[in-house]
Image 1: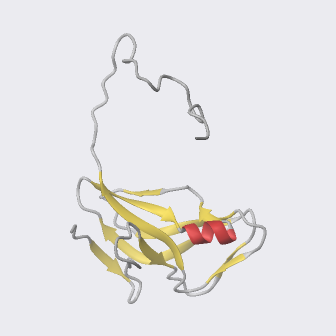
Image 2 (image 1 turned 180 degrees about the vertical axis):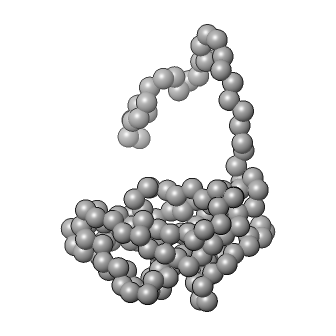
Length: 145
């Protein structure tokens, strides 16, 4: 198990809800409720600062329940928390729903997944890239199945 140092407001430590969960829930560490109107976004603090180990990245994902039930997602889709960042992890919530959504202190607002990554060296080549079965067709080219 990977050890990750954190500094968190009392009671706002990241929590895995179930055995086998990849994402640890982060909760709203706010003094006053935050209401996000339809089509608007708002910053919500989590009270958590992390020290991601070298060769790892923290990925901040929206909570599927908020998205599916209320249209609440992260404004940037997925947040990338680099290992050198030491500030508070904040969530920029975007309301794609039709109703205002109010965040209360302690509400689960996003989840944090920490994964290893490979740093690459990119080489410029002359000529063409090698061929593949996938080819050059882009988004949606493999069909719905």
